[in-house]
Length: 229
Ligand code: ATP
Ligand code: MG
Image 1 (spheres, rainbow, N blue to C red):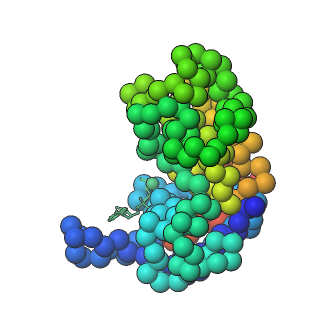
Image 2 (image 1 turned 135 degrees about the horizontal axis):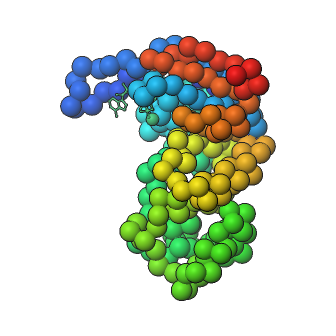
């Protein structure tokens, strides 16, 4: 089911070989997303929005404070269980030179085709499927998918995973109007009753959120209910 999210006075700095001088980019960041609600996250470039997604999917651990998912400190969860609970959609969709089925399931052949077809129906992708030569067995590759189809593939993967938390990092940029409308309808269905963090520049995406946080320099500069905007 849906999982709550809590950041407790989180401090964070990226460290790497190239940047030996650590740069603190998050300072005592605290916020809470109740289970089932959608949080909109806005802020200028470099504000720390994607870093929040990285911390929740534990690509990095917080240096200070705690990140809790469903009340559990992410550092105490196994990476496998955490990755199963967090569905992350970014602009970079990984597409394999493989069948549509394998692209949807990440090569997990225990998933039934019925399930995949139901998800393609939900995303209004049946007409597109009908144009492919071999149904779910049709070979696709990064070069044969448009940006919009890539986004829809990413959303289909999230539907299939049905995680306790969905994070969308500016997912619907660069789409044509028809695909964008499909993505919007899919998001309406996907976010209902699920916990989500939506990182967005556009107002219509943010209006779907229950609450909005405005970040700057890794700190909350404003927050409020979407109805107050
Ligand atoms: P945008 O709107 O451009 O996507 P953002 O709000 O998502 O921006 P972040 O990607 O979270 O911002 O970056 C926050 C800060 O951390 C920036 O100053 C950025 O330069 C820095 N940063 C991000 N990723 C790394 C990294 N892998 N190594 C070092 N610094 C990084
Ligand atoms: Mg970002």
